[in-house]
Length: 259
Image 1 (tube, rainbow, N blue to C red):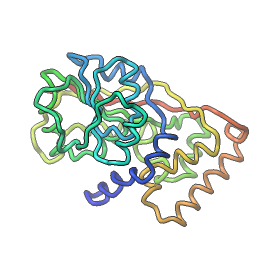
Image 2: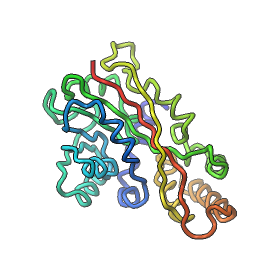
Image 3: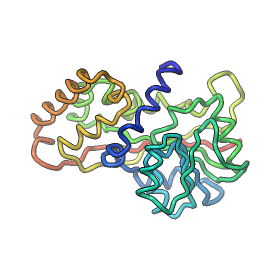
């Protein structure tokens, strides 16, 4: 994905901020705890915070959290659902915080949108000594047969290259690096996965997949046809055809320390 295409995908969520807030999953608490485990203190920046899915878990876990989100619509939803959280306009490439002002920077399903050539030094700037950078992604567990079949039916726009565990591990292993030959500002990465799940119906799972960036930028007729195909598939499966079910998921974490 080139820079223009990445920007198009990254900016697609604001128009559906309410649907994003309603249908996207939260993050496994064990995954968030592991991400924060080596942090030298409680000050956490949720970077690219969206509607506050990760922010809410950080609040529950007692973090002193600040949210930064570039999209006005997403930030409005975050403020509506979490009025006690300080939510600022900004981006990974221009963080509106002082030097060494946080102990950890976390990004929930957002780090792949960052331009790390610019964002890497900026994240390092706001992190305290030995601070932690961690990206978290919610993954569909395609070790479960019907989930693997759903991924095939939906195609890359609905279930993309970072949305299943094996592909996620490969896609994110070097995501913390600047990518332009510049010196790394973070140490050796660690990856871990944690069991997770989301209660869904066929209708609400289709609505969830409709909030994926690949679906949002798809031409309307093609998107409608893809969602109809997914719905028809879910209607045929015994796991998903009758009322509520648990979508098998994992929360994957990439964690590094500031050098």
